[in-house]
Image 1 (cartoon, rainbow, N blue to C red):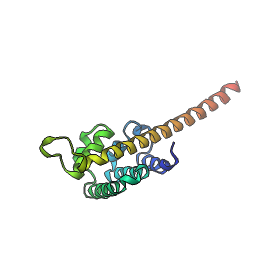
Image 2: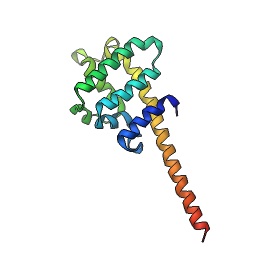
Image 3: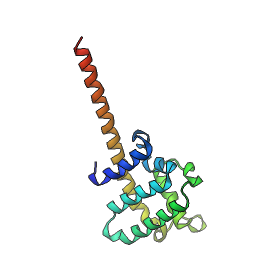
Length: 154
């Protein structure tokens, strides 16, 4: 797991109580509990993975996303999306507004940040999955060790 993502994985773990439930959709799972917390984790992951070229766009998005999340801590739309990519797209739309005439979001509005968001979200998901699997392995190893110790004494 990327060492820079460990604090973010810890935030998700602390907020949810375990990582198993968040493996499939960590940002959405956290957003259903707390949109401001999910946006904070996403913002940190985005800042860590953004290139210098994208710094201004990332900073503008982070500020807008955090302001939106604080003003709307439990928006109804969070319950209507089912994946992290859907969550990210809807969050961008909520912040930047819908594309005109139902067209695809132009790159100049929110679309330019979507690739950076997707990349940051994928890295975070991998870190959550890795941490959850490591915790499960440690639990399994502990149980196996106890079982072998118990059965060896018979």
